[in-house]
Image 1: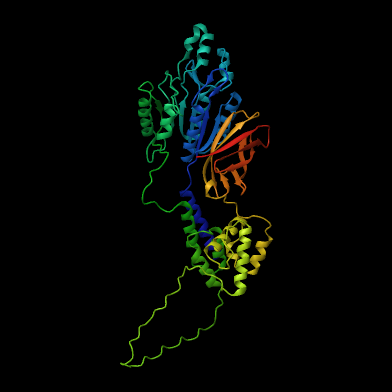
Image 2: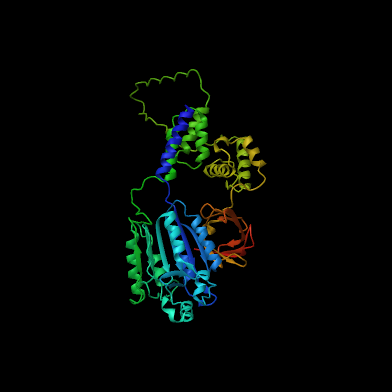
Length: 520
């Protein structure tokens, strides 16, 4: 029977997981501003930061680089391409200088000089390099180019070409695309876009505002973008796009009031339905271990108590009710109904002197281990039980096996240090912008990501693992795939409610630098 139930659960889980599989979305975001031979642009770094943050909220895994030289730009593009396999949607956003030569479009790294036509292939990156990889590996491709800015490098190149200077055009040229690709320019082909006076360029500000409008197709969002840019530039700049999409692309689904259960809850429900009628304690202990805060915890505990209760062969007959004497002169009697014990009421151990002393010791040990049982008052209430569940979750032990007992106390005493992560108060919980600034041979100057802090744990996808200690010490490991193998960065520093800072280093190379953290 156990094998049958286990097999049934596996089938339910696989069917549910298949229906709930998340769409894979990958984005490349590049912002180049600090040009060594063309002056500095005002907005691209902010543009890249804000677009990356927007895309992360829409479920994209973002590969991001800022102020990239030629080597860094190609390395970043290669990392993006390596992550594209089986992607449902691939997106490329670029802010910085771009130019067209003989009808081909190029993106310009920050170290480019472009003193002659021969330098193009060695100092600039053709847009087609990124597009061809996207169209080969992804089903749907979205490309946004805020790269039509007034470019002194293009003017220098045109002067060096003499009579052939007409081969260097203003802005970017029209781009043909394969099936399933949309290319969006900040302005129409051959024209020059404006940087704007605010934090972002007019085009990027509109993208951040309108991308991912709930239930809206991308083409509708780009109409909103066009209207905003026309208004912001007094009609001087008209965003333009070329699309060969074959269906709607909705970056954020419309939320409805009648939403079904979440994916995690559906899986839990399937598991519970497969074991709820079992007569073996192991099933319910397994449930409590997998779902210490699940919807059926109270019922599972009661089932365990019932299954562990000794069974007697026969029950004593109930005492028959006593007859009521017919005495009219007596005062009328009112029957009092005793309330039934609530089936989900939290069970507490008997409050004998020894048990209260045991509970106080358990509460003290849970507090020592960072699991926050509250005041050691000898009452095993909700806070104490929650602390024990937190201990079980972070120690990897089954909560069902952690009965209030001297054995449990001995087990807690054997843990030498904190088990539950530090919460550091609610003041640090939330979204933080982490910005890394290179001070070594990294191939990039500045990168930023949005990370989440929750109860002393720092997360961002599956490749970031970090903690914040009670004293505010930050320790982060960032894993990434580069040059055919998994590599990592180590970040260490300090953080408080006003912000944080520290240093980072590449564990397998010489890249190093500083980082800052600011609340979002």
